[in-house]
View 1 (cartoon, rainbow, N blue to C red):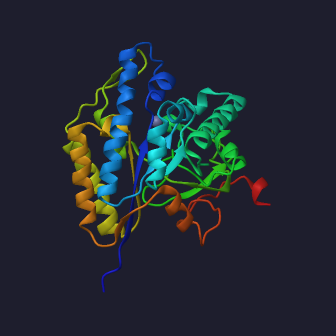
View 2 (cartoon, protein in one colour):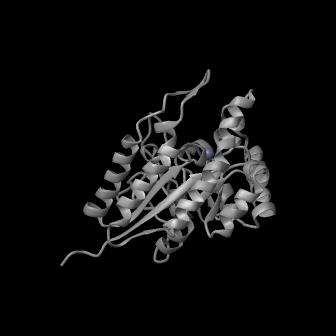
Length: 298
Ligand SMILES: [Zn+2]
């Protein structure tokens, strides 16, 4: 008898708008900023596409975006999608002091609460980098999951505090905590495929044929569906990137591919996380060890 499939797809969108150009790339020109101004255009198109497929997605939204484009953020919420935290103005936490990181977290929360009346339970670090303070802060502020790490593909796992590493000692696993990781991957992100960015610090050539990501995303799905059978596929997109016409058609083709398969549904990250953790408690990844920090195990 064939095993019943249960594959869920998390379509996630980082609604960066201006914030990535200001916070990450230090924009100095209106032209550069205008690339972020396309984000809201993309959001409208995505909302229409999601509605057509009766799919709910997750929009990680910096506070700066919520204040700049309040109607769009409210439309996201009104249509039943999840809104997650994505910094204040797309800061990379590893460049911040612990106090600055706390301020950024609070400012993002405050903007989302004021504009969209939501208290997010999910966090995605801009630039997918976490500082040593990030996980403790997320716990303190009551988050349930974070989505910036790459230690698994089709299954969430528990975040840890206090991992220790060096070039001379064995790896010491930190303490697993009640914060779930929803893993991401660069090959499942639209930005590197498409976005053309040349700054003194960063070069991404982008502008790839949409069949490139389509092939990769479909094959990742096919592997999950046919070889694994159960799990979550998380795709990361940016409205200002995926919102361009020929890329929207690529996303439509991807959606049409996955929904042909029985046992496939769309999910928000929060919904998946709550379901996944029901029968679990914080633990290390399977097979981890033997070097552990005995202090927290005692
Ligand atoms: Zn972002």
